[in-house]
Length: 272
Image 1: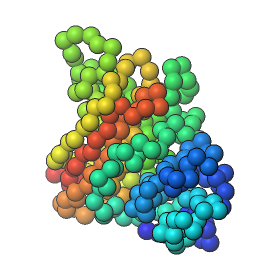
Image 2 (image 1 turned 90 degrees about the vertical axis):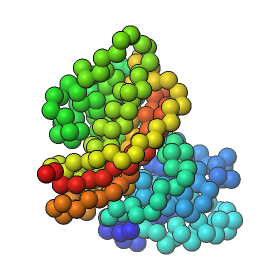
Image 3 (image 1 turned 120 degrees about the horizontal axis):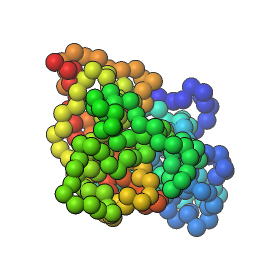
């Protein structure tokens, strides 16, 4: 992990809750802390992952009770503010990966103004460039208004596509289309963090957990976290013919609630 050169003397532990948009807080302290985006942590392993995901936007707050959490205090005091992971996230995904990401509010000050979270909100949906999701027809691009919150990528979603024709209408978004949203988010997020545009991704494994129906009547936000490279300023990796295995955690949110989540394991390689 590389430190953020713009904060050479600062560490992840912050003295006041107002210091950062996302506040990592030990679970027992939550009732005592007021912050719009509190993210509870139970261990150094959880805090390390969340810090790598939220990067310069987060800090750990212990207040006057730091002595009760010595491991978290020592870790935060040794970790530069704005954790930057210049290479792949080499550790295995935490078992509670999806639950960890659910702790981070999808609607927050970092993404506010760049995404629609409720019906009628600005800005208008602007589809991604088709090359970012490996499509030729722009109408088949299901992602819009992409932005990054640390190393988390968020997109608004379209819930219909000429590629998908179902034999009956439904007020819910069909699982096949949600799966395609997850696939497109995987491709877009890995390109955003450095995968060359002329490389391809081969899907090896897909796991999705559908927790709630996704309705067509409200905006959908897709979130993705790619293990490949965090973030793109490390520069693209271009090793001709070499395969790279990675995983991408994907979630679908609506009305501030996570409706489905999962993980895609893929292999990247130079296009033949």
